[in-house]
Each structure stands twice: as structure tokens, then as C-alpha cells.
View (spheres, one colour):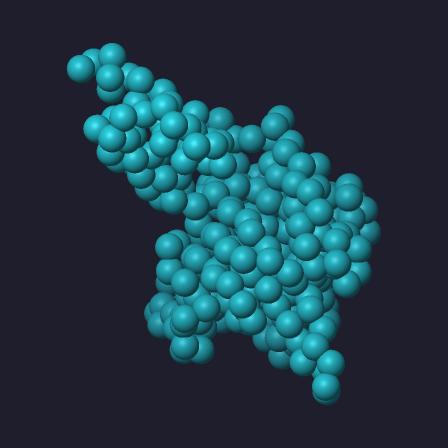
Amino acid sequence: MRWCSFFLLTVGFILFRFKSFQDTFIYCYVSPGFRRGYYQVYNIFGALKMKNTIIKLENVSKIYQMGDVQVPALRNINLEVQKGEFLAITGASGSGKSTIMNLVGCLDLPSKGNIFLDGSDIAKFRESRLAQTRGKKIGFVFQQFNLIPTLTALENVMLPLEFQDVDSFTAKKKAFDLLKLVGLEDRVNHLPSQLSGGQQQRVAISRALSVDPEIILADEPTGNLDSKTGAFIMNFLAKIHGSDSKTIIIVTHDLHLVKHAERVVHLKDGEIEKIDHNHKNRRRV
């Protein structure tokens, strides 16, 4: 029986990687008894893979209604993001980058298809649950920083913690530690208007990390920064990806930024044109 188990495991793994050949092979060359055993093994591999998938887009489309005209922003997107992956999504203006970020970030719902976050289909969530999911699982970094102008750097970073009912003392300490991590411990009481663009983006990153989210979504995170500050931001994102195993997704049109990613998804006219793999950036676990 040992050789039978070995055979099933080997074939199961190979055909799990090449699913399109599965049924033809199984039904042509495998007896009914072996067939049942094979599918048990196949399901084990499927379960292991799903366990490591944090985001899955399944036949996702997004259509905007502009008067009497329907404008498709995304068409039948199929994509899986693994836990701890650094993924870049790139494309020209109008390719669907921001739309896919809004969907993954629970800021919008698809017109068609399913989006799974940790195995739950967010397309079926009510707005209250979407907001709760955003607050706990996802940290956002925007091109325009989106800091509240009347709050200090420290207060901006504390805000997500207060929404999660973290007590004031704990929130203040964590916010200060995060600002110190990005080199802004001497700017904690400054308003956004008193900070440079790079400093504001560092505050925004600290805010995104405040609730210790599993996923960081960054939309053109260096778009309003000079090259030196932009390099600091990207190196910092790469650092937290490596040290904290965060899932990082950046949306950008700047091809210089994608060198940090393990995979690069190229969008064109609302569809995935191709996916590049950057094997030298893969984390070793």
C-alpha cells in the first residue's frame, strides 16, 4: 500500500498544479478505487492552498452606470493573493487599478463575481460588516495621505485604535511607538500642514499599521513624493513585509516601484494582461 500512497500523492501534486488535465487523466487511466483516493488527496492539497490564500477574486467584474451607458471598469478578474505576499498591481490610467483596490479594500462591491477575504465572501457583507472588516484587517496608504488636518500626527495615528475601542493610554503609546519607528518621534504634536509630504506619508503608514492589520493596501504611495523620500517609503514597506509577514499590495503606474514585489499584475482595459514573477524577492520561510 505504501507505493499506492506515494503514487497518489505524487500524481495529486502534479495534477493539482495542472488542473486542466485532471479529469482526462483520471477517467482514462485510473480505476474507480484509485480515483476516489486521488480526489481525497487532491482535496487535501486544495485545502492547504486555500489556507494560505488571504484574498481571492473569482470572475469579478465591475460596471459603472453613467446615465444610460454602462462603463465596464473590470472584466472577469481571477486572482489569488497569498498570505505574506508582496503584490504590485500596475497599468495605465483607466486600466482598473483603483477599482480593484477599492474592491479588495472592502470600499466597494463587485457587479459580478465573488471576492473572498480569509475565506469569507465580502460581496455578501452588509455595509456594517464591511466597515468592521476594513477597520480590523486592512490598513490603507493613499497618494494624497488623507490625514485629518485638525489632528496632530499622534492623533491621526491614534484614530483607528479609538474606533476599535482601544483605551486612550494604550492607543497613545502605540501611536508614539509607530511614529518613532518611521523617525517622527519629534513631530508627534505637529499638524499635517506643518509636515513635509514625506513626513505626512510616514504618518499615514503609521496610521495604517496602528491596528496591526493583516493587509496593507497602498495606492500610488510615492506619487506625491520626491525620489529619495519615495525610496524610503518603499524600503520601509519592504521591511515590514519581511519582518512582520504583512501582505502588501501596492497599486501604481510607476514600473520602478514594482521591483520590490514578488508578483506584478499588469492590467489593461479592465483585464489582467499578464502576471510577472520576481523570484529573487520571494521570502524564505
